[in-house]
Image (tube, rainbow, N blue to C red; front, side, top):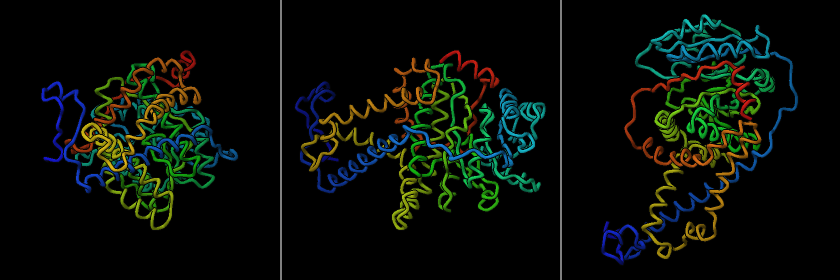
Length: 441
């Protein structure tokens, strides 16, 4: 690594830290070419992440509402969720949709508490599953879908919620509109159930609102495929019969999205079908949860990104190309970090076409930071989130930028053999949520 050894004007340790970085002699042309290619990839992907959100400034609505027709099976995978599952079932029972057109199933997956009893008492049907070797939400869903199909129940679609959720009364009505229109995979909007509990749940909530409007809704408005989010999702029963679920990674939702897209079925976004997800209240719990997501995203990207990009280029299909861009996101964060480190050790004058150097001197990154900081404010106001959450705005960059080390650790750190459970304790009725939102607007 002789060529990468910095030669500093000051030989002291202080000069090593604070002195201007220089590299002598200049890098070989192969290294320069690789750096230039990585810079171009980084810049183009950055422009992509700036262009997509522009389409989230409006809400695309379905052309018409149709009378209730579709029959739904609501499936709730639950592992030790006795504290919160009854409130979700109660909010499902209060849906503004004919009771005879939906059934509620709770998958008591390897439970060691009273989840099954709480679900039965709340009026749900319980599917018990005991399998200590195949653990995780993906396995639970696969098992439940097969059990329900084996019973020959006539359902048009499966709707999946996490046990800690609450559901907006119009959720199934919106999903019915999509199913009647022929959509086979629909992702509803995930809101935060408890954004005012702590700064972690608050900033987590803001990041979700940004993703909802300026990523998923934006892609739907542009005609691209959305991505399943693990909860608040609706999948055609006939599609499950045809291709199976079979998604058992740490991010089974993204895995199934890509599996279906390769078969020509894209995921559409339903912005007005809302479920409320409990956000963890401590940074440690958030770190653990998001690290699992990153590990799953990297695994799915390795499985599908090459195929998506190849088919997109060969077939000229923009859906596949955009899906490859979606899968590239964790690598984009790592690429940006790597280039930032290189920019310290490699001055711009040693590069043939220092793209990042030009962008830095033009104020591009300041503009980008301003946009990233403005989006949570815009998403909160447009989608009527509790405005008091914006009190946590100064800490929003801390939460967002923590994804950078998280991504490196998730991609290259030790990987758990099994899915890990996130404990949920924030029990509240839907009426309490509505009152809390009204009070804190």
